[in-house]
Image 1 (cartoon, rainbow, N blue to C red):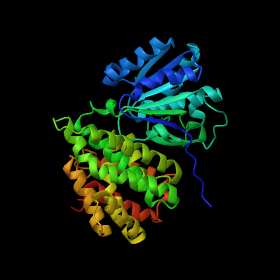
Image 2: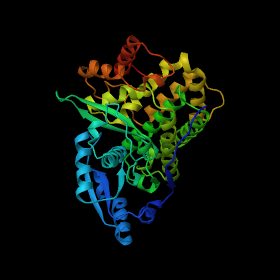
Image 3: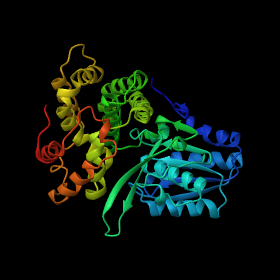
Image 4: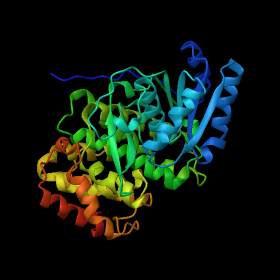
Length: 390
């Protein structure tokens, strides 16, 4: 027996951002906290349109725009205090994965009336439904708009940073508004990194020991869209007409998000989380670099599934696991992904701490290969300085 639970309502299509205010009115929201990053997203036309829509509908809002990459628990607590002080009763996460995850953390903290620190990395479960939460992604990558997960940075007493994932049925947003028009302004580098993030989610969920026929369907369709459209989407900012590629990538990210909530992730994320927390490498870029190396290591244990990934990505009928790995490497090369961590500027001084965090990664058990500690050390050495197959 297997279970499939994906309760988030999805609105998808060009211009569907306009539905945010009417949907909030249906939810009987009286005051909304909008969570965004510190980047230009908060000054974008999309954000302005969102605010104009709320004003026209008569729904007051408060803007919490302090989220950086990988929000820490202190920031979530700060947002929670703003929500309470302003007497909000609904939340919008607008931006990439970090603002939406922060919005999830605020919603959970409000519901539990406790600091998010009590739940991150402690094993303590959320028990209460959250306020109405709408997720509006402006990148095509994390898929967090439809997931039961959120990732936060934890800073210990010695100042050491680590990224901890949390999951709960209450994290699923009530509504996801996926408007590809919001993605047009993404530069090629961000398009590449977030697109490879989505691809990593689809691939790791597909090879997971906890995959199901339903999650497989979402994974393979996501991979097909990415194989067809990621290169074109990366070129779009340079004048190539490819709005359809933006639609494909937006849908691919959402499909992969649905899948990962059902099947989980693997050791690509096991390495990528500490690389991001310790070395500051953006999450999507870390995934993109690490992905082909981990896939290569899985060939003895997941050959058929790796072949299926290659077929979906390349639209070729016959492709070996090795050719699948090369196809992933070639895609990364074509869109400007560095070939290893060293090339991306990750210092070897982080090696031992990255390995330590990877060894304790809670989703390690989802991997189709039961890596020994020695094998993970060897794999990380290759990820640092090796060359992916091309």
